[in-house]
Image (tube, rainbow over all chains, first blue to last red; front, top):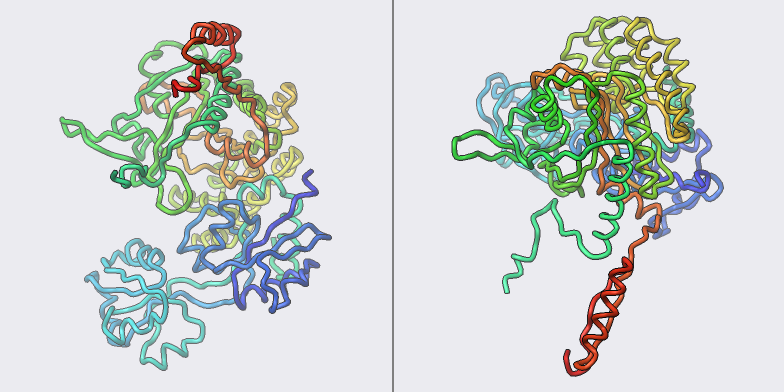
Length: 218
Length: 372
């Protein structure tokens, strides 16, 4: 009965999904179907090893995993911090490395040195709130934006922004810079808490194989 | 008609018809098992003073409690969990008693969890508490009873995972961690977040040997053989004692014959501070939530003025129901028989219905023809 069960992976749509699949291929887990970009299927199956894959929007991946709709998921640390779901975070896949930062015009650096109220625009209100309230003890007004957060300080919607910085190119082009580092980010493998208990042989083997490929000591 | 009146607030819902019949059947099966083990039903109020559930007692975080005030300005709380109420009751009515006390309960609990995550804010819980007994047999009885209650409810595929807080605590003490670091580390370890734990320990200047040992706890889960590995890794008496206790517990569970459902997880550390010894959770395929949780809480009763050891468990009935549905367990629910009557045959039909009821069958009278 247990053998017949599919192990389901939820992957974050986009570049990360393909990077993850490359990594999984290195430990012998393949899914030819999913690579066919013209396919409009939502679920991809590897019958031989009883695996299923589906692509979801990044922030939804922890939701699928928490509820057990997927056993294993791959999502950015930013998403995990923002969503704060009850899942096991088992591996740092070392993909999509970047940083979560407070950014703004150089003149805004002064505003971060005191405890005065400032306005912060971000796609990640929970992360921004946690950083300013619990780490810096600064009162802030958080404005949730859904994209192009760099606009915030430019059009004077906010004093600073909290956002992901990869190379800093977009920031520089718009006259902004990194003012403070919040934390480093990368893609993480997450596991449903029940699946970890019920299917622990298969999941543990995948984790150990990935650890070997990623050269992480135990 | 005001359609707005027809909705329930988010996180609460109506349960009716066949669904409620199934839920009641399952509850009855479980209650019967509790009764067979000699547990006595106890009913506590739906709301209590805030202090019963406060941070010092170590239950649900304050912001997840439904709070309100009475006319004297006291803060009241809708119970988020039964155990503190049980402890309060035991301390109040059985203060001088030192014979083992067996309580069971059934009722709804309330937590103000965040919206739109697909979680209910009002759920039904049934549980047991065994007070004044610190033995390993008491731990075994509570866990065996959980297994038998789940089997009686019809669940077949489930796993009870057992941990022991003292193992982790002993390791923390040995590594010289302060309380705050220990709490932070507990979150990382119970989330099996190895690099988070490592970063924290590096920043606190913990040496490599202790770092490896503490992080190694995340790998200590699986069937009973894992206890051997855990014992070899333990470097202090407190952790070793914890493993000895778990081994004895496993022997007791083998005697009960429930060992096929048992596994161990030394990285399982509850966010409830009151657990002091063995803790456990039961999982089932198909649902992401635990269906049973429980453990030993030897210091909780002391908060209410009676120093006594205790161990307990709680079955989350709503989660159990979804597990039964997902595992396609059919639950016998008696059909309702309809007895029809016309103007002239009412007495006859009534007699028939009463006979059916006397035989324990469900019967309703239905008017026919021009009477409708």
